Image: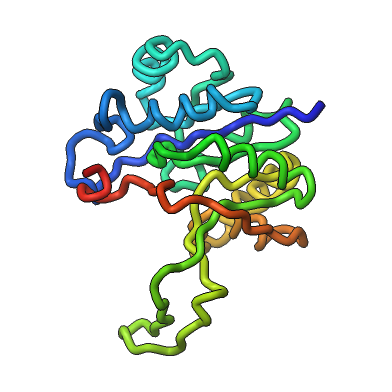
Length: 224
């Protein structure tokens, strides 16, 4: 029986929220943003949860989230790193007994059970799947000076979401190669997990249907 772990990322400071409190700790309706995300996986078919939080927040997470909301599936709490990829790597290190990992932004509180289940079923077939929705606006590709270079076909453009789900060995191998490369070349920029797998493996990443309600809390209007 395959084992699925969710790596929930909660190490960001959320500078664009213009708040002294990290966005994942802000209250949304009756509980913190992060609690909504963690409960989604607690109530799913995932076998375990690893929380990656800000350095020094480990005990706060344990008391205010794991204990307060009776989260039985949390296997470990670890601190993140300077960049998102450091945080993901730290989380993956604690998932060694998993066959598959779902990597999710803790600031996406409205991930649905359907999205999680689609990720878990599709990754068994494709090894690498990412949640996405079709672009609803025309997208322009611009140069560094802000002049339009091209207009891609909107039907081929997607907005990425999380979770992004991978065979554990594939994710671990890809991230290990990235971390090794960064020792020699600091000028590597990656913005999501699929990009790491694309760069360091031959596995094609499959897009699966997300939901427009699965937004990431980034700026104050998102919270409203």
